[in-house]
Length: 196
Image 1 (spheres, rainbow, N blue to C red):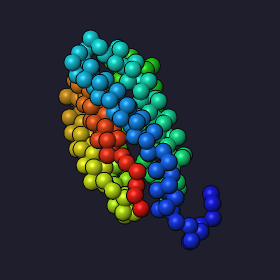
Image 2 (image 1 turned 90 degrees about the vertical axis):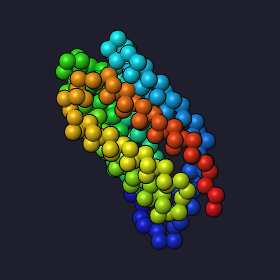
Image 3 (image 1 turned 45 degrees about the vertical axis):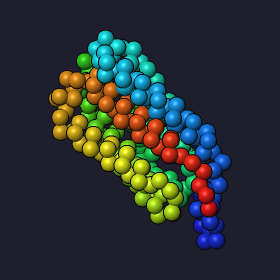
């Protein structure tokens, strides 16, 4: 860990790092968002017939996404790091591994609870991120707040209805993918270089 330097401009360092990678981040955010939305639509259209295929694809996407979140946490400047990003990365990777290796009859109940907690943690992280953006005067913090609140509301709904969520697991997975994909799409579209 570096020693604290009161003369160091953390905002300028963040802005220069952001502007250097914004195009790549925007492209990948939109691509992953589209893939998540398409997987969510496929899961909603045929929740039982496509479950095995979707289960494998979702597992791979969640594992890769979880690893990407852990890497993102490691590359984020210390002042802007959120421990929930690390927790989300680990939970998404574990969720992906669980979907990949456990039989469906064992995963139905636990998946509903895990999805609920993932939604709530992701929402809390988005709201916290939005507050940091607003504090440092960065644009478009409202979009991050809205996606965070939507994630929290969906998580609470899944916690309050675990049996229903377990019975309609395909639709629950579809909802998770659609909400997560839509959140990424909105954030990807709103990404732009920061003008100072």
